[in-house]
Amino acid sequence: MLALLLAALPALAAPSWSQVKAHSAWELFKTADSDVAADVKLYQATIAGTKCFKADATVSGIEPETMLAVAADVEGAMRWSSAGIKDAVTLKKTNTEMDYYQYLSVPLVSDRFWFLHGTFVREGDLIGLRWEKAWDGGGPYSTTWQEVVAAHPKAVEPPVNVGAWLFKGTDSVDVTYLVCTDAGGAIPANLQSMATKGTLPKTVDDLLKEAKRR
Image (cartoon, rainbow, N blue to C red):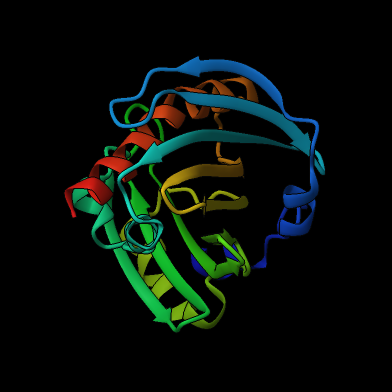
């Protein structure tokens, strides 16, 4: 019954990928140190009413295709990501798209989980993976979604989750991590933003370290 009630809840409006891609009024709020790149520039913006964050870095000596493979390795993220991913499943994957589920353990507040639709980006020397919350109640994976809700009744599925990993270049690669999200639950918006800002550099470093290792 709980799963059916949650599935019936309307989704919050989320920025489209075209809106995020076209947005140019990003505000630089910090330049952070990196263990792999020279530094990581951190930006914020509000797009279609949602707080969005961007991390830009430049790295050499790592192939873009290797970084993309790490970004798409949702199960492997349980090992190489420091975000606290405790469960992950690739639900569908082709050369152009992938659907996946991940469960995140969050200290002090309710855990989070998401069912996302990803699209591979290939535009000239730009490659990447972008994603969005495309369905309520897990969409075509509703049975798995209901099993997750039943097993973790206090976990929260963020109502807005749009983002991307983008890699541009060959010898020197520009790396961009984008995320627009509303974490949902009882976390105040300002605390959500503070938490996301704090994790941006580590998220980038995690992926680059794993790509360098491979």
